[in-house]
Image: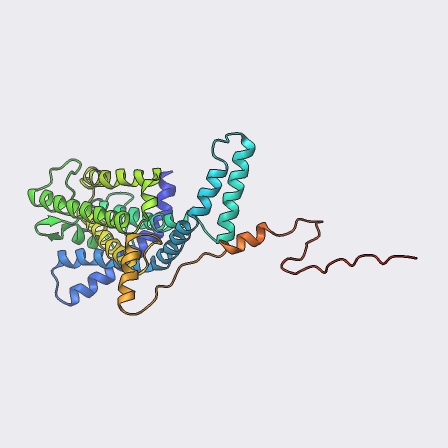
Length: 329
């Protein structure tokens, strides 16, 4: 299973190796020290990955907006089947929800796509940096990955920033990390936790409607908001400094991206939307209202449509008064 997973990740590792090598060549040409050149190459790799994910992020935003706008209809369906636990009712409820998704073009899983697609890049980079020492020593199963030969791996492995190697971690197997490594990794972990907390906090406090903050999902998000720093502290101590640099850079990108979205594409009914409406009003502009096809009046028309085999009666027209029958002689 592990070999199969490594086989799937190899093309990504190969691409990352070439991107890192190209960035290092550029930073080396402008005169950066070797350690900083490789560190900045990891930052450059992160930027390339996030730029490639922008189209998916845009889809995520549109999907999130649709999910927020269809919540009133979703609540109607849930209220309709409240307390009904029989299989027929559950099946009918699920069918109505799926029909709502279909009519509005909403995909509830679109918001997970950027995270799912970014994960292989993270794991591939983790393997690339975590195996540098074994590759530099020429151990079996650690052959060259594109331009990252054993010689280049030894150069990266021995490169330092602030006196700490890029391949070192806070806790290392079979060795004790120096004080400079512990200090640098601790700072990176704190910064990672702070950027993640800030991103989620501004999302929940500024870009979510007040009604959405009372549901069970929002309460779970609040718990995760305070658990994530603990998760980073536990997991981060095992990651090489190079991986921590990648993680911190992608967190900074996410925080800036989220700030731009909240300011310019706020969620309907949120505090951020009210502030944007005020800013546009001061400029003499009207805010464009978001709409979702398949909601509103279209649904009412569909509900009022005649059933099969039923004759539709004209509406809005006065019927001619029936003439009294003439008296027959």
